[in-house]
Length: 114
Ligand SMILES: [Zn+2]
Image (cartoon, rainbow, N blue to C red; front, side, top):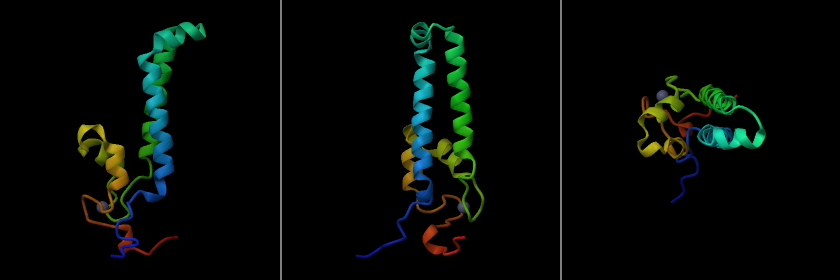
């Protein structure tokens, strides 16, 4: 059974971006959770660490979401996955998604790559 392109995930070309983003999100979450101990070690106020973590989290989340849209219908796959994936495994969901859940668009059916 040869199936070279049809199982290629929609966001295949953005995997690295998603991974980096997810890593930074995890790091920012850790910074918020352990804000007090990080602040104590760094010698700064804990609210600065907490606020910094939240700001980084929000910035990375929105920069990850930018451009992750379906070429067919324009739905933002990032927010769609974020809202619809179960058990918070939206990253996994996004990597495996080979067709658009809304319009059925797939990379295999399109050779229009500029
Ligand atoms: Zn679509």
